[in-house]
Length: 88
Image (tube, rainbow, N blue to C red; front, side, top):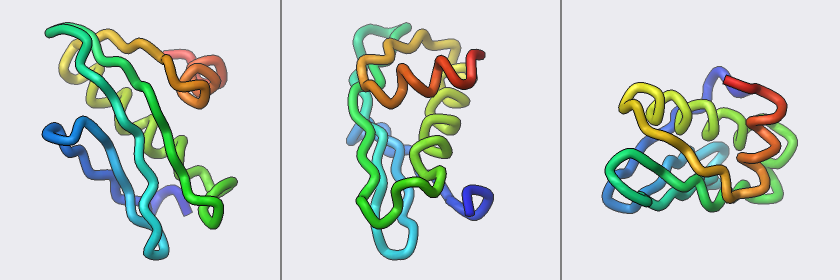
């Protein structure tokens, strides 16, 4: 399923989101300074949990941070776990 998930970045709302089966999952961040993002909250509706949706959001968010040469603060517990599973 994760290959089909389209992630959108909304800089104005400071989030990455994906709509799957009519349900929206979101990874929210805060801009700490010009070089740092705080990935502060990840939400996946119950109906989508266990399907890799949060991992797809995290992968897209980290790809963006790397592309922009930004540091990431993993204040969201899911993001901290993701970093342990997939160190980059």
